[in-house]
Image 1: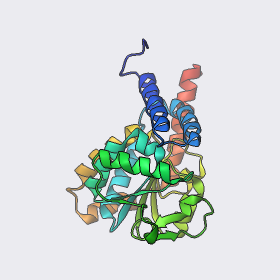
Image 2: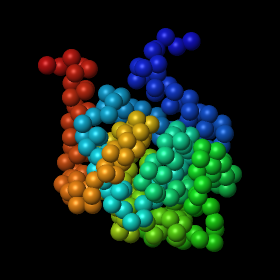
Image 3: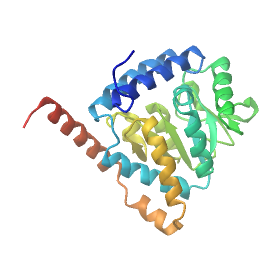
Length: 254
């Protein structure tokens, strides 16, 4: 039995790991998704395993951008379905966004498992399941180029949690506003997205839901002001400074 208190960040990390392993056993998560989680844990440790000031700012901007969107879409992969299916569905309802399953390592069995999980957690409409509505997103070679013409292909704002850099770049070139969660502020995804939330998605998703609720009372002019004043590159630099400060403090360097 673990002696780590449930409120301790380490306990939360172990719970996340357990959810992903269970997701792998259920066919939701690819083995490559487990490797990606390992990289994420390392960066989360460097960030202090907490949501920093820069991440909170990005969350507020993301909420405002989603409320301004004409057609927001949330892209769902296996890791998201395993880690926070209830929260991603709550977010979709809060911002009136559709869900679309989009996988890098794709197969029909895994896709069906993800769809089943989403439906079991309250999702009604799930895009990316009908071959007749599939189109190709230009500028990408992986299976993620296959998107729904009524979803990501037509969206103005796309939320891409735990994304790969190639598709982020392709989405930007296609004129989409991209919001991502990425624990590595130096990744291509982080550097390419319009709004990067440098935080663990399991922490940030609830904050994004709550911020969306608060900002839903604002008018469009107020929301636009929040978005217009945001500089993603500057925000990423602030996250890097947070990592440096954490390293300095933990190393005991004056």
